[in-house]
Length: 183
Image 1: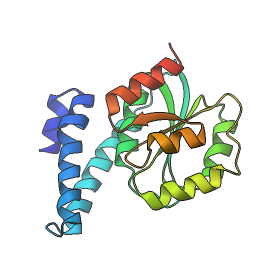
Image 2: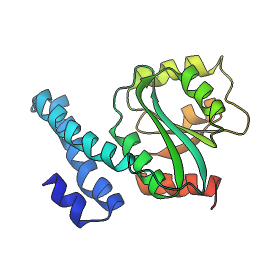
Image 3: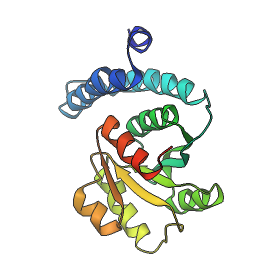
């Protein structure tokens, strides 16, 4: 069914209207004790494999480089991986570093590749709190916009960190990032 959905629809629509609601439902059921974690992991693995295949289809860049990662302690990466695929489709050169990546390494890498943006995905409160603590002592490279998205990226947290808020919706996040680097 997942392959059919990806084959028949627009990528952004499939991610927003099919994949996200199913993953959220499974996560909610698991949190309520109604779902085995194995079912969530099975679906997540299938979605991750599909998104990684799409991301490996490199395209020409017109907007610049975007570095995407989940900070240390954050393992929920599918939303950020979906954003990476959509940004690549929108003309970005994407460097997707994945889950549980120390922020110092992310920012060092962003400087090396002359990234325009660093996008961090936040779901879990413990990872978001740790990110705040580390960023208080870390400088974002000159000319790099720090963008936070996901349920853990509250407006208050984003303001405290001097970052930009991407929210939880993929389409608006892509539009916001597009405005940072028009083609």
